[in-house]
View 1 (tube, rainbow, N blue to C red):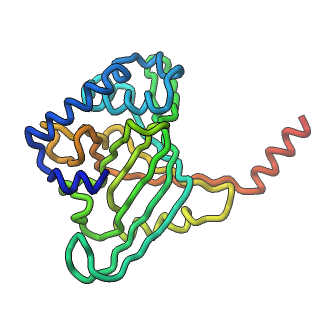
View 2 (view 1 turned 90 degrees about the vertical axis):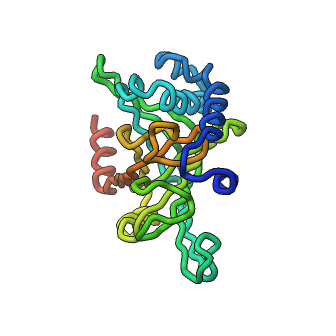
View 3 (view 1 turned 120 degrees about the vertical axis):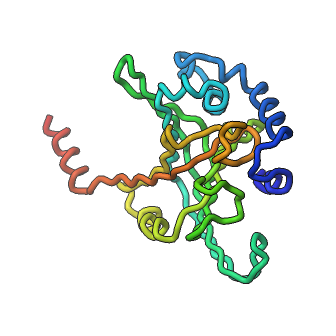
Length: 238
């Protein structure tokens, strides 16, 4: 998918890009136009279409739900390449992180002061480790990533391509490789960092129908074995 994007599109939004985006939105409109009360009965793939359509076609109202995308990291792979870079055509070392994530969308029901999270499918995260914005994938100046989807797969497959700096990678890598079962890492995309790749949002780039991302947030959660043991003891005593 990404190779097709690089070959056929550049970071600038043109008329052809917008036409393809509108075509994609029409194919998922039936799911996107559903109400929030329909989400529990929808499949993961249908919910993903709902998220993408509302971000593109109903952004102002969608923002009121404070949508946050949360990718629970299930698998991590680091690839280091030394040699001729296909992107820069120079001899260099390239470092890439591949994550497998289970994605959820968290919505805030302000009228009820409540939050709910819904699964929207699994997907891959491909991050380049670099101290300056890479040429692959092609992004805008202050953009960190874009998210795309493949509606032909079931459950709906989500793809995120972006980059992180070396200091960020050094901060999170020990947690990603932690053998402790009580520790897990989430990739969080908050609502004020998600933007439709369309005309009027020239500060983000990506394939037609994708979501531009300006911030990546990694959240590490852990519970000590002692704390878990205490909770089990308290439960047994009751």
